[in-house]
Length: 353
Image (tube, rainbow, N blue to C red; front, side, top):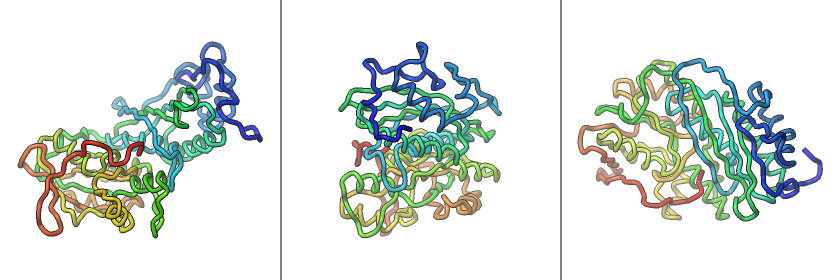
């Protein structure tokens, strides 16, 4: 990295030239910006044999004939927030999507959309964060792309990812395998990511510190699978939170799901912020929480396994699947009344991930 502060504008070229799929330049080396980013930032941070081959694509070894494959894009604002940043969010989010399929994360591709004028030290912080999180979760960044857009058209950084993982379970994990009688397990408290992003973005201050739950879920999920628990479905609780995840699964499975409001753990600072701002915690985004559907007979053992992991210390059973109205989700209140849970028509807080 140069010692003086530089921005993307300092290295921009008339037609920004991107990286080919293995973070090497097309057309014999490309522009100055792309060359500098590859040689001084991306290769040192993400270096591995697949990248160092400097070829147009990565040749990869797969330990299994069955793989999980996913893609996602990240446009969170602000770029940095308590508990994470757009870089850690991008890696963890993709790892978590693979984990929800019952897969061990292996390989990741990254596409950067950079706005002209972006400070190079901002990009450096994001890249170093991605490097650290990828190492912790055991995934390798093996290919990528970078583009620069005109000032005012990119909002700093957008990141696109694609991930590949090896399936670790013989039984498929998906909503269509949910059955009446299944217990609904929640891995921990909800709402912290959504409230943290909102508070940071708007400059709100609360009496207690808020921090995102952004984390990689592969370890806790693989721990559950390695113990032989019969897992029918997994879903991380990102956009739309717990409520949207439950509705999506109920509709796909064509069964009814009921949860108990008193059983859903919500931190006091999140609950207080929601009361002030008029939010419902079950609709808030999370980046380190998931639900699991398992047979009732295995639910208590599954909770014990989850609680043995640092990310699952507050794991609990919050509801069950019934053969009632297909696609319906209901919540039993603390007072014993029941209400229908539906997806919200709009985002409570846009640009959340």
